[in-house]
Length: 141
Image (cartoon, rainbow, N blue to C red; front, side, top):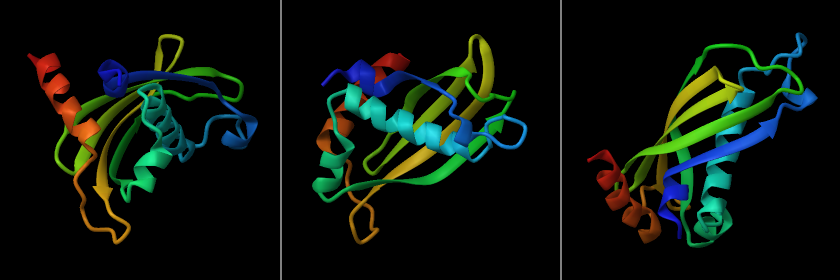
């Protein structure tokens, strides 16, 4: 599993019409979907299918999301969303996101993702994720 891809990833996409409001600007709620799509694609690029995580009896649920909006994105814009894992603990991951149109920062965010079982109780992250904590600590040095 490529550790680098599971720690930082760039996701590119075009803004669809249905993601905009009456002014053709991306509605603020759609950024949460953008972040989710980027996290799932980050896992896939790193060789982890989210479906397999769920099939192992684990769910990765958002427990916190903090978004700052800096500029407007509009219908048909080509955006790049950079996502970085900033922390890995036994049952949680933290991510940071930056959304760009060309060099313009559109939005930034931070999230906390918890690993839980089907009963909603905390469950240890799969070992593949916990092994990444070592790479994350080395990158900080």
